[in-house]
Image 1 (cartoon, rainbow, N blue to C red):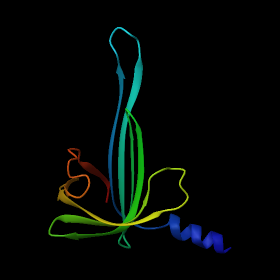
Image 2 (cartoon, rainbow, N blue to C red):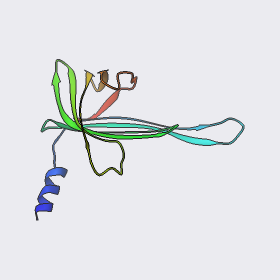
Image 3 (cartoon, rainbow, N blue to C red):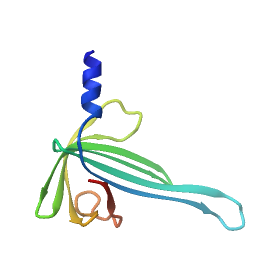
Length: 130
């Protein structure tokens, strides 16, 4: 019964906003017939209780996977993510405690990184649910 209550709490969190970025391509080397897939996926879910969950996946030359959890707030059209937990592999059972911040400029249905470890990013996450 306790497991059922905990599962219900986790599953039924109210979503404030959801942002996604997804890019998939099949590349090929001319003349050799060699093909490979390029996948870049990023999702950010902001919950009504002030927490967030972010999952990033990149597969091209190497596989990069990470999950982030923490708190979020909006100040002056800027989304601020205070990252508290990180997981660098899907198979990891434990979360690593970290203390980092990423800021995004909110523009209509997109968010664009301002600072943080992904300041170099040129992609914009698009809002799919509010």
